[in-house]
Length: 290
Length: 269
Image (tube, rainbow over the protein chains, first blue to last red):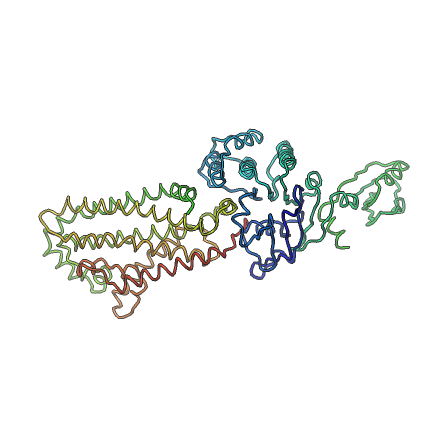
């Protein structure tokens, strides 16, 4: 069953573009990654699905309900972690979390405590006194405490240290194992690859690609830099090598395919330095433009 | 109406309500404490007033007030109470939904399972209750002041009640008009300048309409709809003007609801 169905969704802010003709679906129980550079329309899409803003044309359904007319019912089963967390300053963490829980039927105190423990969040501090990362934790607990069936995470890891990021990912995986569907927006490809089953790539308001994470990884380019004496660009004439550039005795190129082919070729050269890295998201987008 | 939002909003405004209420109570009691002195020197006072320029007397409504009577003096004082109430209510109106947007908590609230109508009505009723507390304090301190300092001078309690009750409708006007303006502009970054602007603006408009005489600017401002001197003189409201006031309030509220339901909540930028 489709949890999210977006069809030809378009949003203009006056004349400024938000998103244009975006269509995709998210199935129950999957972790859907939504990646794109800043300003591509990731937040706009999430805000449309939460009815924080209204579409210019097209529409979307969540849990089979229309986001414009049935937003209130939809939000009953949604948890949302905004990219920037700002909460009523002057309130204590515990009061804010209780305020948040009060909107959902039932008692959520126990789960609130569990989540706060897991994220090492002190409940009795004032929100004003919290660091950015700690505010983010408040956001995480707030988004999860009512056990929603669908989670919207908008760039959730910014501000969290690596240890906390890992705990957070574990938490999301746990939720997912219980059947929670996750919509994960990010501009960091690595974390999306670690967590998601499927990804949608958005650029300048338009969906460029929707694919399985494995397909994306297989088609993934590696960026290779090799430094060695007497190196010529011709040394790496292999299928899958593109964009060869030589600079001060260093050869740079992109490689797509089985990385072992490059390693074998490297082993026959006496190199002074080698690096093989993930291309940046921008470089991957370049690929989608070719 | 959502009880959680109501409670939260009401609590958030408690400090402001306390400051406004105490200030107004002090204003009323200290201002009225001077009444015996004024009344005793009534001849002298009225002579001195007569020497003021006519425009100034008109601006402060002094030509219509007899400061030697309890309610004449109270009406003079009441203009300042109205000004304070106008600024307070405008502040609450401008801040009703804009503070959440400026402090970026609107995302938090509106991603909860509540409808926009519930959000707006809960916030509005909470602001109204906050203003109600201020009203109770104003009413109590007015009675205390008058009972303590009126001496042997009589007054018409019915007229006083008319005057005191008028601030409820008066506040509703500023609350609603502030709200609708805050929804018409793209983003309210700071509430105070807007609140002061609307409150003082309406007062100045009324003062000038007194000076200019013929121009019908008074149709727009609650300070004329509920002209304290006129209420005391006539022992009655000017009904057409009151209906006009209520009409503007109703339109502002209807427009606010319409705008808020269609509003795009601005994102963090």
